[in-house]
Image (cartoon, rainbow, N blue to C red; front, side, top):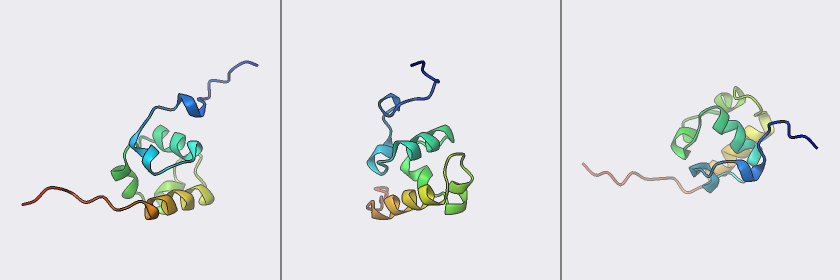
Length: 79
């Protein structure tokens, strides 16, 4: 069977998103949109996620649920 140029799960680069997302489709869509870090993901609203090609309501809700379950990151910078 000829490859259609689509990347398989194993072909996706390792990223910080692996710590939150288990769905390779979600990760692939976010990476294509330029979202590569959890910090970038945290600032996106549900509406922002829905504007990303390949992300619909179910996937957007799954991403937001995964973020909610992830412990919030605290900055170690002190003034």
